[in-house]
Length: 356
Image 1 (cartoon, helix red, strand yellow):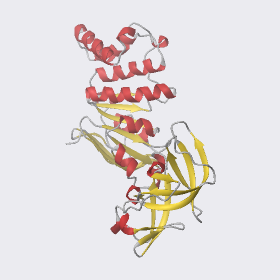
Image 2: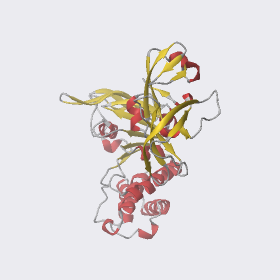
Image 3: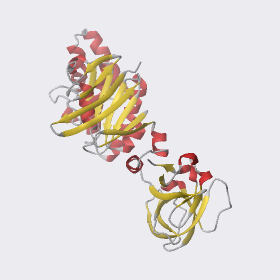
């Protein structure tokens, strides 16, 4: 049985459909991110799970029991869920220890039990030395740790996080991604995480649900989602990619002034008529001379039309010979090619993900 399940859930505000027929199941202890641009419905979905909004259509279940429907809903305070907001919402007049202890005191645990749990969680989030400080005396990352500790210490059945790192600078965001994943690995709380940042989702999640215009376009574990996106939106939202459009003619797929044998693709029986693919920039390799022939790869002549050195890698734009198509290619720092230099592009059709 799933820990948390959404069945054909929609949410409408007047004539606007914010969430449209979303179905999603989470296993106990699973970390799932709702990823998408602003206005895609991810926060509305989270608020329905929390009980702040009722679905217009569909139901939400936890441990097999219905907690939300259009007709009735279990109040948020009775769902055994903790939620962390963008603003952290920690109390400025309470110390770190008092903030963390608050939820335990509401549950009327003994003073000794509260002290023991607070001591343990502050050690886990590395804030024991700051237990007597007030929020105004903490950095943004430390305040975020307080919010996490307060949410986790009550041992909720489900943890909900709504863009929790959006107020932090880039370096702190990167640090806190790993911190959130570390805490999840330790406590194994079923977690729903809302973000528009694909790096956050990739680092923290067991699975990612990519949302667009109120619907889930694809749900996969991060590596599969990146390697085999199903739609143009998912391919473009998860990292950078090249879109190649072609048409099947006989035993090959014909692109812009080059063709690849049909048999070289992962899904040759599915290829019919006009087709589109996603090909990641790092899946293309550049050579000054034609590489040795291989059954796994395809070699295409081209010319460097743009380049940028980004320290960790080169970002090249290459135009295949006689084509209008331009392909982005990521190369290692020592792989230096000049503008207008003629090169050979080597790509593997097995790395090309067919799009719906």
